[in-house]
Picture 1 (cartoon, rainbow, N blue to C red):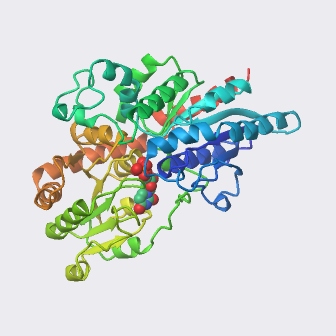
Picture 2 (tube, rainbow, N blue to C red):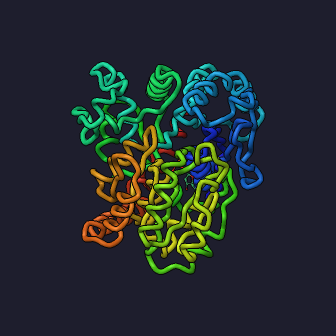
Picture 3 (cartoon, rainbow, N blue to C red):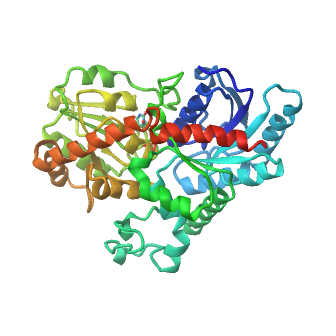
Length: 456
Ligand code: UDP
C-alpha cells in the first residue's frame, strides 16, 4: 500500500444494496491509493462498520418513519431521503470540513452518489468540491439525460399502445425499454431524474463503475453533453483491493450456495437472482419454478424473503417441489453472488440486469438470461441482448415453456456458443483495462491527479 497521502475523502452512499456495494468498493480502491476515508451513512440500511476498520463512519439520522423506511416505492423513498437528509448531512459535513483547521488530513472533496442530488448545494455552501459517483451504467445514464427530450417527443409517459415502437433517437431501445419505475406519482420520478442530471452537470467530475471498451460511445456522448471530467474506472470489484471480499451485504450470505455448487458439473448450473429490490407475483414465481424444473438443468435460485408478493418466502411452491428434483435445485435467501458467478459450475445467470449484476456476470464471462423489472435494468438488458449480444432476453411475459426454451437455447444450442464466445471476449477486456496502461487503470490515475488539482 502507498503511504497515506495526507488527504481525506468523504463518501456518501445511497443506502440501497446496489449502491452501497460499489461505493464501498470505490472507498477501498481510493484507500489503497493512500487516501483516508470517511463514510457518512444514513441509519437506514447501514452496513456493518466493524467490517471496515480502516474507514471512519458517521451515521446521520435520516428521520424516516417506520413506514417510510421501505423500498416498496423506491421513487418516494429516494425523494424523501433527498429532503430529510439535508440538515443532518450538512451538519455532519460542516463539522468534518471545519476540523480541517486542526486535523492533519484536510478533506479534499465529497464523493456522493448521483441520486443524492441535494449534496451539490450542501457542498457548494461549504465551498467543498463534489465529485459524483454514478453506480449505474453510462448507457442508461444517456437515457436519463434525455428525459426532457423523451417527454417533449411524447415517448414519456409511456403509452401501452406504443411499447414495441423504436425510440429512434436512442437505438436500439424500444419504448418498453425506457427506464421508468412504477410509482404513485410519475412526476416525482421526472423531478428526481432532472435533479440528478442537473446537479451532476454542476459537479466537479463523474466517476463510473464501467470501462471504456464496454460503453465507449455512451461515455463519449456524456463527455460531449456534460462539460465535465469523467472517470470510467470500473469494474470496481475487480481492482486489486486491500480488502477483497465484499462485506457490505445487508442480508447474510448463505455459504451452502458454494458447497452445493461444488457438487455440480462444470458450467451446468443456472444461477437465478433478481437483486435486492425486485419482487414477483405468485403467478410469475411459479412459472419461474416450473421453467427451471422442466429445463432439466441444475439451478441455484436466490429467493429473498418478501420478494414473492404476499408471501413470506417459499410457501407458494407446491409441496415437495425441491425434493422431487433430487438435489438438482438449491434455493437460498441471499448468495455470495460474486463468488457464485466465479464458480466453475455456473453456466448462465438469469438476472434482472441491475448494473452490478450485469457487470459481475460480464467479469466472470457468464452469459445471461435477461428479465429486467424496472428503471435502468431495462436499458441494461437491451444492451446485453442486442448491443453486446451476451445474453437472451425473456420478453412478452413469463411462461414456463418460453423459459425452458430460452434456457435450452443458451445452454445447448449454437447461438449459446456464440454468446459464450462474445462474453469471454468482454471478460478479457474487463481484465485488461485494469492492468497498467489499461483504460480504467489510467483513468484512476487521472482521478487521483484531479482530486489534488481541486485544492488549488
Ligand atoms: N447480491 C448478492 N447476493 C444475492 C443477490 C445480489 O451479493 O443473492 C449483490 C450482487 O452481487 C450485486 C448487488 O447485490 O452487487 C445487487 O445490485 P444490482 O445492481 O445487481 O441490483 P439491485 O439490487 O440494485 O436491483
